[in-house]
Image 1 (cartoon, rainbow, N blue to C red):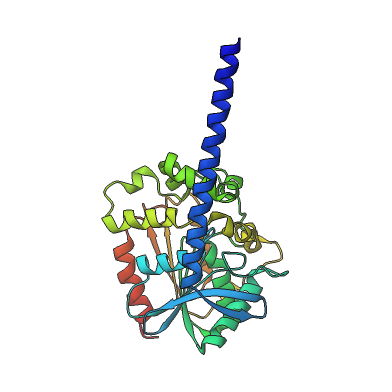
Image 2: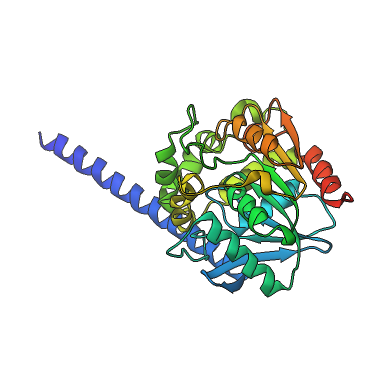
Length: 317
């Protein structure tokens, strides 16, 4: 009996030590990444509070709007992977992500107005917009509200807007689990070490899509997954993703005058193809590129997309 008690105490003690170690390493990684991000970012004051961003490159300006769970760092990764060359990119953090404020009114309309304030502070009269997934709804709203400030739109793996529902069948993990996954830096970091395949699949980088990928696209996936640290600093923003499907959020897609490139993969398991088809059908000057395979991250097509997006952004009216 005493021996069993000692074994039980040893097991509990080991679990406590393991949990403490995981927590320390996870929090340390998050603090290190916070320091790196703070050194890289710039800050702008808008009518809705602080917005953080990073800007690089030369040429016609392109505003980069990240997807759910992102931040300016995810936007930068997106632009580097698929955005083409010869442009000035401005990647922002949306409401509640990393160091950007979460205002009392965090609607897509308010987010579009915050984009406008940032552009005014930077002295930019017109921009093209490169948006992915959850970044698409505020990009649409900006183009609708400020047509004279919008050059072109590139919309990748578009997230739902009203009247679509935020719930999607057959996601790699349930919708509620995404918030749980990102809610704790230690847990997230541990999962990337213990079950990296499952974490990649949560971002729709499924094993079958990773097979035969170019090295730079595999690195893109790894940088995306590892770059979610600090995960907890993105949780507030994730909680606001439902603003795009709020019944009071209307989108005048027929009123968007900017030339628009809509890109989606038919096997995207996070956002259904029907969203992209709706955008293509209702936006007057929309072109549609649909890949049979590639998932949410459009894997296997990054080089092709760099060329297509470059050509689209530089095309004459």
